[in-house]
Image 1 (cartoon, helix red, strand yellow):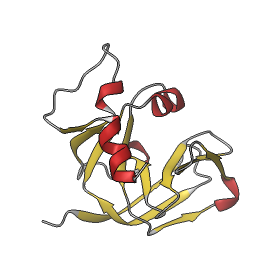
Image 2 (cartoon, rainbow, N blue to C red):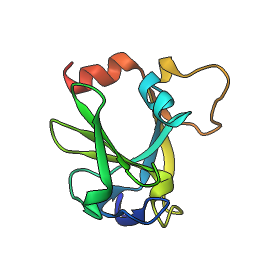
Image 3 (cartoon, rainbow, N blue to C red):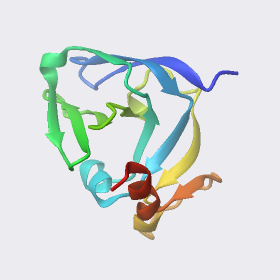
Length: 139
């Protein structure tokens, strides 16, 4: 079984469609303050490397949320479309935006030290702190 798949999906209104050519079958949750403020909870996403294509690019707006990442969303319906690293162009696309979600396995959590006390997941996952992530990013 391959760890990658070609995933397709869209925003809520259908103005933007995407195809992720190297979508990972594993998915994770980010508990950082920015992700929780952006979506009201953890950001459940799939790493898609840099080979992602979009139809409806005119409907995409971007926000530079940090020195190392941009966040994209649909201008019409507000659907979160991606978190993209500036350095290597790797996309993290919300798992819920994919048409076929049955192949995903929830296996990691990042910024686990920022997770609020009022929720937790039952899955056993690899957990990384903010310091772990900043070290990986070289920050």
